Length: 113
Image (tube, rainbow, N blue to C red):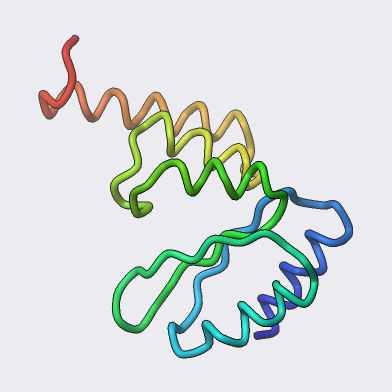
């Protein structure tokens, strides 16, 4: 809960517009209550029976994640890039990651060259 509280602090101070927090599924009601009390938009995605991802922050960013409609491991290369930028990851590193994923996809024959 300490890391979640820090994420909440960063959002409230305007350091980030979107937060991704991974947590134990059993704590879901606590997170929902805290986010609702603070009037912060959020989207929760189950990873498995014991873990979940909580995306929270600016409503527009949360809605983009909702529109993806898939779990993190099923994001397209473009969705992965967008999410990384929205989460505040270094843009140059995100560009390198995107190009690396595209190159790997070409080698595996997943996309046309």
